[in-house]
Length: 212
Image (cartoon, rainbow, N blue to C red; front, side):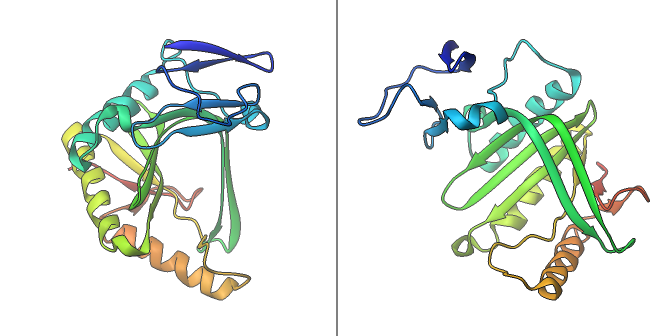
């Protein structure tokens, strides 16, 4: 791992890389990924730091181990994950309380993977739990979401780890249509429940999968 200075900040860069033609190296850092290069502009650095593996917690160990086992199941390598540490916030309409639920974390370790079919993000929760933060499947890869979620739950069963999910009422194809958006949220929650995710607290609309 090498270090790079950018605007007075020290970034950890995991692999050697070549600067692409035309790139402004004073304002851009390349984070290598076996599938595609990730670019961070200088304005983004305050909100995103590539984490230092020496700064590890038990929850992070669980996340990395989970991601390693899951990678084999979905047909990628552990190095295909894009690890990051950043603030994270979720906002969702709680259908039970009829109020907006807001969840914010000042810092969260996230493992991300994206290809032409789907985008997947998992994050740390505790030593025996991870969160399925994002699962988005492109229209032309219909059915991939069910396949990926089954791989996630197979990994949870194998390792004895719970999986948290907070379904959010967001659909990029819906504009200013709250009724349709709430219908989408209900469909999404029912979809996760069909995989045995359950409500676990009156204080959050999040769902939990408990390993078998």
